[in-house]
Length: 125
Image (cartoon, rainbow, N blue to C red; front, side):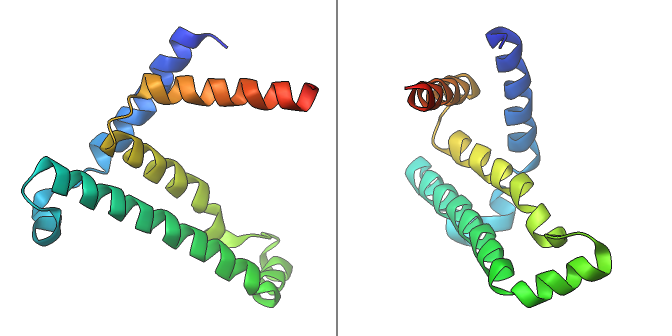
């Protein structure tokens, strides 16, 4: 991995998410609050609710096996569009959570690379 170019690319994705999925006070004025702590608490809770909702969609789709199998027989698409949206939504919400908590793209990329290295060591050892 070229760490510098990877960080630049990761930064671009991080910025893209945070510029396009911004918590605008006019959309959430009743619940955000006035202080920085209120805003961080609201945004963290809201992002985690989205993640929970995505996880619920995945569980619900898996529990509806007959519907999934029937959809497959008709469309050839085993998981259907609902679950296929989950990775995109999880990435967006994960990056929003990092941004809300003040984790920079560089720090997040460093954490991911360290975690991957640890995973590789455990698999080899």
